[in-house]
Image 1 (spheres, rainbow, N blue to C red):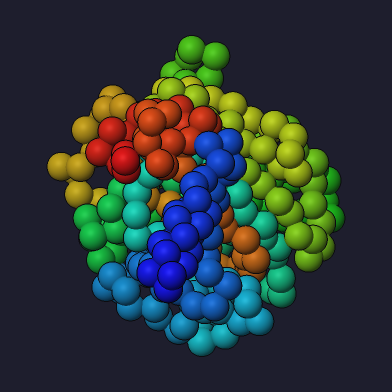
Image 2: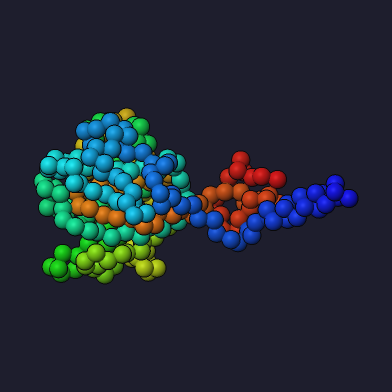
Length: 281
């Protein structure tokens, strides 16, 4: 009788493990407690040297601070998630706070962002300023007219706009301006080297296609990993430190690459690219 009881109990647990193929499984890249699974790369410092405790967690927020800096000195920093992705949705909530670090460039006031399709941080030279990547640029209002956010900047990359190669460094989105210490919700739909869309408060504000390696706006990089014209189909995700304090309360990702076999236990209907090696039966 006791043996039968445990058998029934185990069957019950097995039924509970079945997953909804339509249920979205978002990954919390930031766990709300610490910087586990993240790597710091600040210009003029070695990988994982978090100079001045620039990136930290305070009050359950991932924060960027400069209270240990006497001057910014072009120490641009990036906080890299440990894993690279190709097809996904990335959801972030951020707000600017406080005053810019002394010595920060004028253009970086209330300016930060998220880099995606980044090069591996282990391939960055010590004095490299930005990773080769695509940047979802975050801008805060300055009380001096329109200043949209979720723009696109292209350090070491180019994209296509309406089938035309776009080589200027940045392009503004259609978002409104967010003044003050306002929390802003942004989302990025990234589909490999085909289509990328930026959203602010659920409204699409920018779209481009066919990102590729090329162009400038990156200093002191390894030219061997910068073959112009190469399609940019995957990479790492990194949060910026560009001299203005910023806080993040949400950094989550929905992977759109996975097992597309309906017979598998981990099949998801929303996957757009199949990864047969991920299937579990």
